[in-house]
Structure formats: C-alpha cells, structure tokens
Image (tube, rainbow, N blue to C red):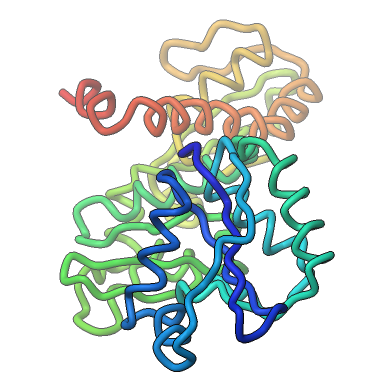
Amino acid sequence: MKAGYIYVLVHPSDPNLYKIGQTVRAPQERLAEHNGDYAKHAGQIVKETGQKWVLKTFIPVPDTDFAEAVFWRATGFTEIPGRGGVEIERMEWKLVEACLKAAEEAGVKPPPKPLPDYVYANNAWMKKRLEGRGIALLGNVKSKASGRNDFQCSNGHVWRTIPNNVAEGEGCPQCGIGKRSPDEIRKAANSGVLCLLIHPDKPGLVKIGLTYKTLQQSQAENDWGDWIVHRYRSVEEPTLAESLVWQMLSHPMPNEREAVKIDLHAVEQAFRELHYRLVREIALAEVTVTSCGIGCASAKSP
C-alpha cells in the first residue's frame, strides 16, 4: 500500500481523450515523463500529433493501487484500459469526475477475508501429498475433486489440473517429475482409517480401531478379528482424529484400544461430528504455519 495521487491528463487533440495514472511523486513529474517517452502509448500520441498532454487534475489517495482499481471499476467498462499499462480512454468529463469521486472515497483496500477452514485443511492435505515430489501448489485448494489448481514442478513447468489427480500420484505432464503410485502417496501421507467396532456377542461394548492400511486391506487381513466395522472415517491426521473422538465422548483414551462400555449412539454421533472437528484443528495448524512462515514449520521439525 502506497499513498500518492491519482492524476488525469487530457490531450488537446481531443477534449474527451484522457490518460489516468497513479504516482507517489508529484503528478507534474509524471506529466513530463509521459510527454517525453515516445516508446509508450501516451508519448506516441504526442509524437504523432505534435501536441503534449496537459494535467487536468489530481487527487491525493492513501492507497494508489486500490484507488486506481476503484476508478476503472466505476467507469463500468467491460475491458479495463489499464491492462497493458495504457490507461488511455475516451470518456465524458462527467464520468471522469464521478470515477475520481469514487476513487477518492475508496480509502485503503480492505484486508482479504479469511479463508474457510476447509480450504486451509485442503491445502494441508495437498501439501502432505507433494512432499519430496518436486511439485509445488500454487494458490488454494477450494475443491479436491471438482475444482482446478495450478501446480509447478522443480523444472519450472506450470500446469492446471484437478488437485485430486496430483494427490493420487499424477506427475508433471511435461517432464514426469513427481509421479508416484497411489500406494506410495498414501504411505507417505500417513493417512489412516478410524473404525467404530462392535461385537455381536458383546452388546454395550465398543472399540475404536485405527489402521494405516486401506479399509479393504484391513478387513481382508482380518485385523479386527470377530469385531465388526460399524462406522468408519478416512482421516488425514489419524492420531489427532482418534484423540478428538475420545474428547467428544469425555472419556479417557484406552491405552491398548481395548473395548469399553459406552453408549453406542454417543460414539456414532462423535463419528458424525469428527470430520468437522478434524478440519477445524487441521485448519488452525495450517493457519499458524502459514502466518509465521517456513521458519516456524522448520522449528517444529526434529
């Protein structure tokens, strides 16, 4: 954010031809530069007509970038002349005055709204799956499966695709860097499955089981014995997820994940709420890392 001026130049060859600009210096200095730089569009008009731009007016503003953006938005033009650094347009003076008033009243650009928790959690989910692959996420993941995001590999290639494709092992489409199998990704991300287990012969008793395999692998290998998976949740931070369930139940976590006597409906409700609680916790951790920068993240590493 820089305080400065929004200035308006008019050209003698056409009373409706205006050049709008912003500066942190004296507007008169910018006027001289526009009239003398024939490589730029404003200077080309001077060269072609033999007539120089005249300083029509200027206004002080606390945030030059924001004020200029507000000016052009107020014109209602679909194509903003400022693109490409030209900022020259034919307009009625009444319109220019109205847009200057809007720019003057704009003040300072408001800070961006905080992202929803799920976006921070999605970012953390994506970053875990990019570690050690030579691929960086550009921007925020608003949707894992239906949205699109930009990615950049360590060779400088940038591409846009569905985040889930990269999360499941897709590498750079140009050089192949970062390609992994889904199984390699799952193991590296250390994600897991939290299971609510019940036993047909032991009513009133439940177990909370945690596996780092897929649910299908765990069931095929009979990890739970005679216990039946009643509910399950794929979880991004398994240890945190398990502790959150016991917190919601106001019950200490069993040392060996043994069966406990507890109301089944209460555990079912905890599993229903788990996703939102986990997203919130992951988002808070991601905000902390993002806010304090790489140094904080490194300080937490062993």
